Length: 328
Ligand code: ZN
Image 1 (cartoon, protein in one colour):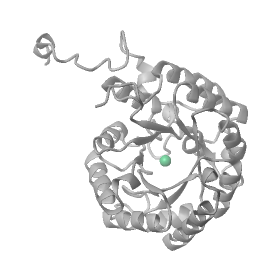
Image 2 (cartoon, rainbow, N blue to C red):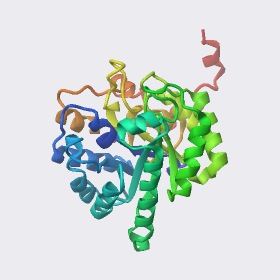
Image 3 (spheres, rainbow, N blue to C red):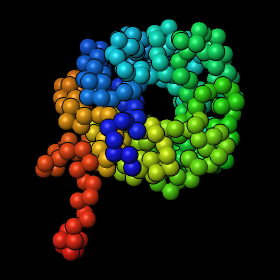
Image 4 (cartoon, rainbow, N blue to C red):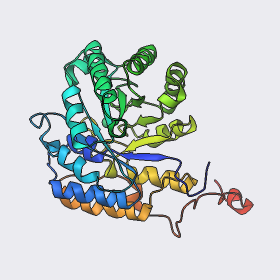
């Protein structure tokens, strides 16, 4: 593992989108701006600030265009947004998003329910967006990525065939996406499956076309899955501050993997994320104050940092023989 200060792992904060979209509470725009600013100040270099879906469907994210425009003023921050279709992509580009992600659900049942589109219809949108992006002046083109949702299993279809994930990844690249990501939308994935699917998809589209995964902690395997992805050479991990979003099917379980816990794991292993963990932990106060009725998750924030904690704190501490002799 690299222990220099140059960040080797990109954490993409998705709380303002994936977290907030599943809450009943609507966070005020000013609080969202304060959250985004504070997290960027803590060293987070990419934030998905919202989704360009009709406000009627997701009133929680109705202010996405304003947030993109605001976040673009933060130096060094990649401003990402989710787009469900061509109209959403147009709006995201008009607002100035650096990166746009379109979800394609590998489970077609989920695709019909979530986006009201078949795979063919989604691929047609992808082609239209790719054309739109290619037609822009080079310095105005957003990075266009597709997320393979329900890649590890679906609450409607159950198991999802791996060859279907691979086939759709190839179709998305062919349709003009720069990159695909693997999303464990339902929290079904296990570490062995994560490794296998990353290898299979990379063998089909090339390692440079799959650099990120999106994980949920629904069954408590989020960090194990993140580590498995890291060992396969994945360099971008999505996570959500406070793991907000929850999961209606698993009371007490967080939604996305918790940014604070993920940064603690990586930071203590000596894997640089560029994020200041103490500053990151302080961002929770902003989010909790703006969402007084919602529960924030995370083990590290609740337990606190280990005594005398600093970066790479856990490196080499088990080498002394007096430690190993005291193991049960
Ligand atoms: Zn998600």
